[in-house]
Length: 211
Image (tube, rainbow, N blue to C red):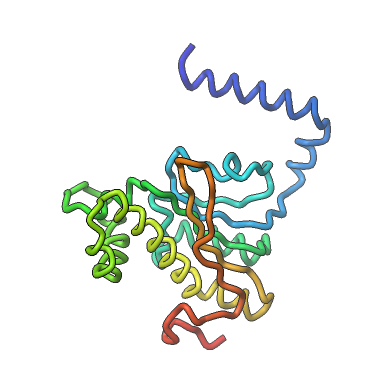
């Protein structure tokens, strides 16, 4: 049996188990979704949102990319954000990084990696912003992990810079914006920062829109 066929077989087993536990499970799931959370995480296969939070389908709206970046020209991410905030009315938007992130590691090198050079350039900009602190760390693993944390902080700030979040703060007094980090060695998620609706103190005033 080929590996992808095993996935399909596992899906059938999962579906049968769910239906046995709750005969209305799939009927309710097909009716729609009302998640409370938007998860912007890394595409790393070791960091699936539902598995590591013990949640069921329908509870977390998810967007994932390399190194959990929030980029103001990324229409994919912005479309997810707008739908989650304006249509689904999520109460919490979470940027979730993880220690040992390959994208962050790559940003600390001078390697020419092709197309991804353009993507991780955004992490290099984070490095430059905190260069004095990062260059004071001799251990490369420790330096990488600190950049993983700082990258989360900057992506949270990027979220607050969007008109999507700012309009929701004005009209709904929601959502909260969180910066989280996953420790793959323990499986634990820790919060680095939390920004309450209407708190612009973490960004420069030039990024605040007149709404």
